[in-house]
Structure formats: structure tokens, C-alpha cells
Length: 288
Image (cartoon, rainbow, N blue to C red; front, side, top):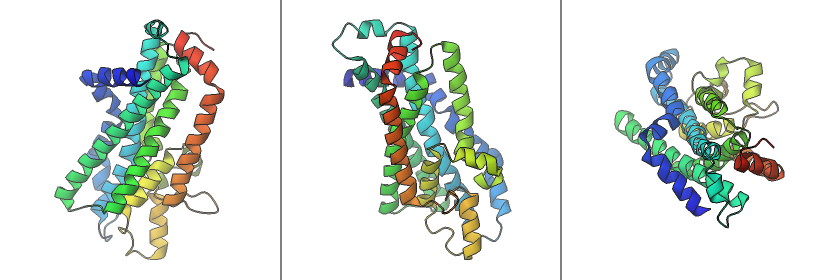
């Protein structure tokens, strides 16, 4: 299992194109933010203190989970490519079980998502520190790292479930393009969640990593909105997707984290229940 994970990571970092295309979704979010979105947000909130930091932290809260979902999918893509190239025939000659082989891909996807999220987080915070004087406390960094860790496991599990049903290069390319394009929208990285319709917001709320973006944003925002009147603060918390409106209550950091853990547990259970089908689809190249 560890040998397969190591092999997958070496193959990934050996190819510069792999790195670029796995980060494409993140680059799209960041590029659109810098070119079109950032200044519009800043101009739209004149009179609000720290509005530049508010805009930047809003973007970063989406950028990190987008990085998790796109980079982990690139590793699951390796599993599909290996299957289509009959690489699993070589693996079958070893004493590794089907589950161990797939876990090798899962843990390599998780590790990659973890490393890339930390890299993006650190790079952005270094930039914001020198550009705006923005810095985080040890507590904020610790909570962010917890969210990043769970997000890595969850993103890899989501992509493993998706990848288990892909059995052609065309399907792989199509899904990869959809994930890269849609991830930023679902995380609220293109427009604030308050700008979309109620129906779209409700659909987005069913996607587990929405709560990763919300939790990270709440940690990153910290006291940025504290000086606003209570009604304005509550509106902006919902508008920016910092707190998700569940109807009877708004989420907070603790609830966001529990939802992520619960989603991960449910996904693991689904993968376990479907493991025989998924393993055969993934390891034999046949539809289950």
C-alpha cells in the first residue's frame, strides 16, 4: 500500500504538466479573483474597515478546498489511467489485495491534497503579510490545519467514489474538466454565496466541502467584521458564505467541522458498502 502511494506521488511530481493541471481549478479561482472580482468587492463595501482583507480572506477560504478537490482528483486519475493501461495486471502478481491497492491511491491522493493545501495556504499568507500586514494567531493556524487535514481526506474520498465509476479516457477527461470548472463555483470562489439564487444555495449546501470553505472563512475572518452593527455583520456572514444558513440556525466553526467529519464517515461507509463493485470496476477495467 505504501509502495503504491510512493510510486503515485513520484509519478505526479515527475511531470510538471500533472502539477499544473491539478492546480488549474485553483489558478482559475485566483486569476478571476485578481482580474475581475477583487476590486469590485472592495469598491462595493466602501466605508467598511479592512474591506481589502475581507475580500482576500473570502477568496482564500475557497481557494484552499478547491486545491484539495482538484489535486486529489489528479491522483485518482492516475488510478484510472493505470487501470486502462492494464497496470493492475502487474499489481495482481504481488500479494497485495484489491483493497490495499486502492487504499494506496486513496492515501496518495489524501497526502497530495494535504501538501498542496498547506503550500497554497502558506504562500498566500506570506503574500498577504507583506502586502497588507495580515497575520494569523497560532490558534487560527492550528484550526486551519485541522480543517485542511479533514478536507484532504474528504476530497480524496469524494474523488475515489467518482473515479470508481469511470472506465474510459473520455469520461476521465470530461469529469476532470467539470471538476476544475465547477469547484470554484461550489466553494463560492467566483461570486459570494449571497449573490446566487436560493435554489442554488440549497444545492450547494448538500456538497460537504461547502462547510470546509465556510469553516476556513470564519477562522480567517476572525474579528474583521466585529466593528459592524449586528444586523450588518449577520448579513455579511451569510453573504460571504462564512456561515451557512441551515434554516433554523447558522453554522459555526465547530458545526462545520462536525459536518465534515460526519460526511467523511458517511462516505467511508458508502465506499465500504460499494467496495466490491468499486474494486472490480477499478481493478479489472470492467463495469461492475
